[in-house]
Image (cartoon, rainbow over all chains, first blue to last red; front, side, top):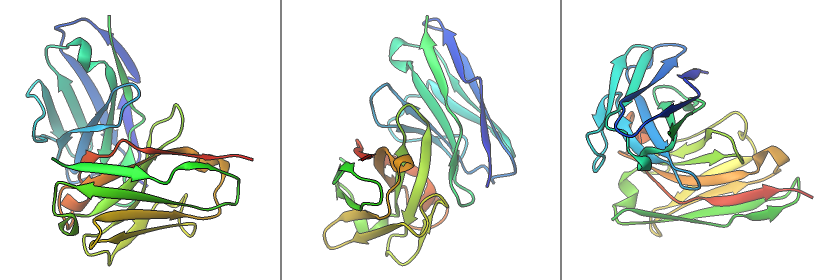
Length: 107
Length: 123
């Protein structure tokens, strides 16, 4: 199975900050990498697919980068509503696997 | 507007069975692959199973293989998950998830999620 390792597991940042979350795959995934946001008590929401493409309706403050095995999610201009847990996921090979999540807290 | 409405969750004893349903609205259901993803209380996301647009191809996580069966009825725009031989570790919120296409890799790219249905396995 492909292991997805996210870092950090949690972070705290101020309103207006730019934050970066890292996701590393245990092997190459052809850039078939997605990012999801899950607010407390809510279902996940899709943000990014194919490592860098924004899902329809997602604000451009979210961006994805990376290739090969190393990927990042960047959130610009952090707002209170961005407080959530963020997950990466590879969809290159079965079983589809998720990272452990990164909890983003607003100071 | 895409909507995915799960139902069928509940409390079931170990070894019991349950069938989840997911009614889909707002898109051409028969053109898209569909998946189930679960989340144990306080834990992360775990992919469970996927079914192709036509229903011909399926795949499962090892943790549920041989116990769970995914199926779909394209005439009813409904996705199912039959869960047998349930264990305590199957306790989770089960999400119905839409793929962004019918074939690889879009079939595995999740674009819409339902609100989930809670399955609790306990005596």
